[in-house]
Image (cartoon, rainbow, N blue to C red; front, side, top):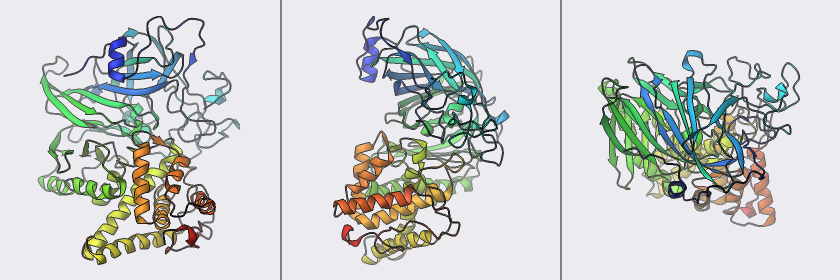
Length: 594
C-alpha cells in the first residue's frame, strides 16, 4: 500500500530523521538565493550541466502510471522528492529532459504541476549556465549557455568560456556540435516562501507523456528504451551516465544519492522492476486501465546514485529466492524468449550468489539486502550495474560481463564516484572483477583455490594479465582522470588501464593488504561518494612500509597510471612504476610486501 507523504513538521521529521523548521522561522530580512544549478565545478567539461545545489537529496517516491501498449505515462504519474535545504533557498532546480536529439526514441514529456510541501508553486525551464559563472545562474551572455566537449568551448564564435552542457552528439565529430545552445533542461522551482537552511521539504512533480532516451556526448543512447517486440511490451531502463532525466525529474548527479520507493501502476500482466526488495504486487481496479492494472511496490533502503535507478516494465518471467546468505535474489527475463534461451539465461543468472560470495572475499560483505538481474529485449547500448538489479540488453547474458557488473555493486554503487571524471575508478575495479573471474577459472583447472597449485595458478593468471596489458600500445593515450564525454567509456583509458593499475597495486601492497584496503574503503565511503585523493589515500594507508619516500613513490605511481597522458601511439612512453614481479621498471623494493 502506498504511503501518503504529508508535508507537516512532525511527518517530515519522522521520515527524514531531521528536525523540520518551525513555522515562521524564516524572516524576510534573511539573505536567500537561488540554489546552484549544477554540482560541477569551474573547468569541468564532462556533463557539467548535471546536478543541483542548495539542498541534499534524501528520499524519492516514484509513482509511475504507465501504459505499456502506448508507452505513455498517464495522468497521476508523479515523483515525490524529499530533500533538505543546505542554504536559505529562494528557488532550486531539478534536471528533467522533456525532449532529446533522439527524435521519436527520445522523451516527449509535459509537466502538469509542481508542489512544495503540498502547495502548488511556480516553475519554469531554463538553460544551464557553466559552473561557477561569476555572472550568476541567469547570465545574459548566450555564450555562457553553450555546449562543448572541452574547456573552453571554442565554438564557431571562439567562445572563451567553459561549456555549460554536453552536446547530444549526432555526428561522428566529437567537437562538431560545440557551440550549440544548451537545451532548457533545468526545472527551476520557486516555493511560496523561501526554504531556510536545514529545513526538510517535499517537492512533487506531476508529468505525463512518452519517456525516452538521452543522446550522450559519444553518440550512444541511454535512458528509457521502448520494448515493442512483441508490440506493446513496455520499457527497458538503463541510464548511465545521465539518462534518468529522460524519464523522471531528479537531482541528476552521481553524488546525489537518495533512497527510493517505487509504486508503479501498470497494465495487468505486466511486471514493474525496481531497485531493492519487492514489497508487494497488488491487482487494482483503475479506470485508466480498462483491462485491469497492478501496483508494484519496490523498496530500496540504500542510497542510489542518479544513473543506477532501475524501473523497467514489461512481460517478464520472474524467479526469486532467499540465498544461503539470507539475501534476496531476483531473476527477470522476457517471457517471449524461447524455452531454450530462457534456460541458458537462467543457468548464468543463477550463479549470482556464487559470484557475490567470491567477490566478497576481496571487497568485504555485500552492501545491499538484495541482488538481481534483469534481461531486457531492446538492443540498448550496454549492460549496466543498476544498483541491486543488473541489466542486460538484447535478451541474453554472458558470464564475463556478469562478473564485471556484479563487482560494480561495491564499486560505483555502494562507493560512488564524486564526479564523472572519476568514472575510471569504478570501471577499472569492475574490470578487475573480470580478471579475478579469469584467475578463478585458472585456479579451478589447476585443482581449486584450496590447493597450492590452484592458488599459484590464480596468481600467475593475474600477473600474466598485467604483462599482456602492459605490452599493449593502446592503453596510454589519454589520462583516465581527464576524459571527455566522447572518451568516457573508452575501453583503454577507462577500463583496462586503471584495471591494470589495480593489479600492480595488489603486487605493491601484497594480496592481503590490498584486500584489506578495499574493505576499509567500503566501510569508510559506503553509501556515499569518493574523490581521487580519498581513493589514493585509502590505498596508501596499507603500504607495507609507509615511510615518506615510499608514500612519495606511491603518489608518483598514481600520477603515472591515473593522471598522465602518454600520447606516443606506439606505447614508447607509459608508466614506469609497477608492482614487483611484473613487467616495467618496478616499484622501489624497500616499499613493497616482498
